[in-house]
Length: 166
Image 1 (tube, rainbow, N blue to C red):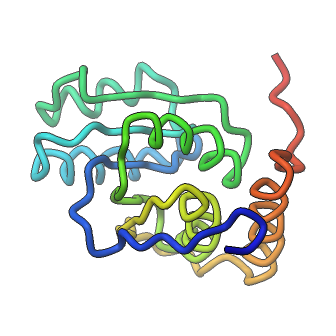
Image 2 (image 1 turned 120 degrees about the vertical axis):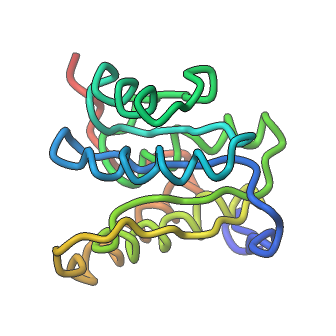
């Protein structure tokens, strides 16, 4: 174990929830993709961190026939690192050991780095599911920067992110 980090050993365990890293309204394709995916996994709760406004998100899932009680919308995060840090305690409290992690393909490398650190710090594994896009992968520097921020969070509880302005 390094700085409170333990490798998640639950990558082979059947996921018990779906996590979606949202974006803005322009990233509504993540929610649409997840609604189809969730219909194939009818017993899993769906946690969406960030993303489109609640009315848009709820409409997408309703059109797909997804029960609204499965949806858990969280708008505390201000960036990718806080997408994970605002959800991980809830996952741990629910005793969830493995999740599906859904985000856009160009964003997945960074999400995987952060997920390995933040979710791994609580022994939670994940299976990445990429939403296809036509965007090139993000620069590796973003993964390195946010990986360091995730390690900072594991060590200190501080993400280095600015708080959301209310």
